[in-house]
Length: 122
Image: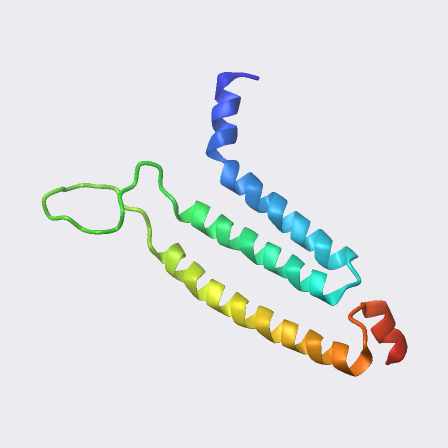
């Protein structure tokens, strides 16, 4: 492998990891019959999206977004993706808690968390 190819791979590593995580989460959601595993797959997908947004907002050689009047012309990292990800983490945590509460109530009522068995009982 050439040196340039290795550099490009390392420079785009967060994008590859986020695509891999999102694909794994999508595969879990589509193939698993257990509802708890589906919620875990959704969490893996959300984590991949968070990683992707943080990677997009990063600037190589950028400084933290704290303005110092002594230094002029400094390239700052964009803080907006980080703020959006904090909001997304809170929303994903609440959705996960709600989904798990619904799964617990389904288990108490039907006695199973498998989608195929739930559809037969319906």
